Length: 243
Image (cartoon, helix red, strand yellow):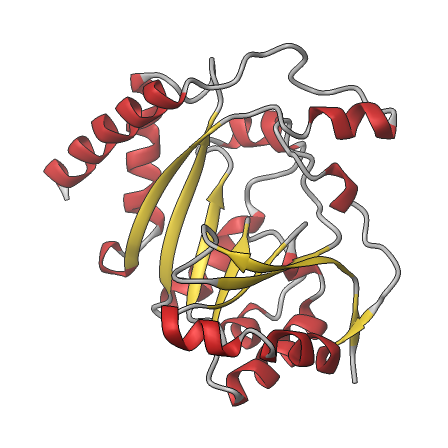
């Protein structure tokens, strides 16, 4: 039985996929997003769960899944860095007919086709839509995401797309136009079930202080939630008009 490094398991998640969900947070991530609120998950820690351990824990919540069309969501960190553990765990969950979502930035270590065989929904985190912007925001090259997206599109996977709106970076018309182009170029429109804008927040700032890491965005104020909603409505009007 393969073991993996699990940071935590949230039992009653309501925002990471449809219905009530068990959210499994795996450790390890290549990206260093400036707005990341889970810096404690950057480095993969010691393996502490087998796939069977996860299954046993998840099965306790299965009655809630059935009543609310819920399931399991793998998040992180970046789940695609623990690909063998992810594949084996997903196969066990699928034997129990459990809906599986994958919350990812698409930057892993391969075997994407094997992972996606057992994934019902991809919650894809759009970091930035230009190479320079992506590099500046994450410290990583953007090209890696296209390998994942190519396979997911070929397998016709359903997507929820998420974009964090950081003040001074994404809250302008130019970025919205670039985002529209990026989505229409890299995704099959009929497979997109939802597009979400998430306002930038500073809830993870204290973690940086505790870990002795300088917070990358300094004293940048949080994104106003009402303005974020207005930007979303403006974007969706633009997106749907040309779709």
